[in-house]
Image (cartoon, rainbow, N blue to C red; front, side, top):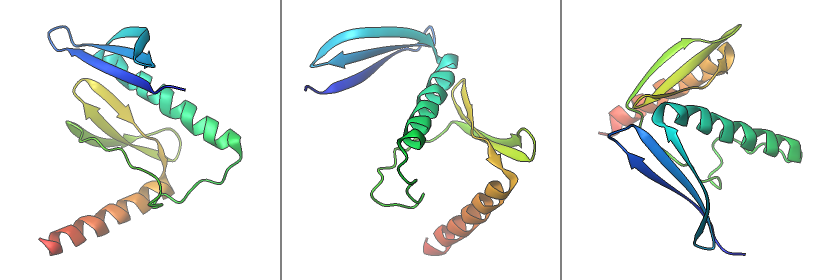
Length: 126
């Protein structure tokens, strides 16, 4: 089977994205969306991936597993807001696209401690 690729082209003047799906080098579908809709698309894809993995019955790898490739991106802004009941939400902005990740208060405290520890370690290495 050939390589499947998603190609994304930008239209900064109109704040639009063209998302094309290719199979074997041929485009077989594309979609134009406003940049504000990118968050909804990203969340839908990540939610589906999370559900699919959960439904597979395989054990969740530890978050620090080095065998898992980490894709990264720097946000244009970030904050933290209250989530639903007993939760908080780190919020990341990518231009006018905004994504929040809801964490239980306990998970947020653990993440906060990890951030403080790692950022302090970084300061001492410089």
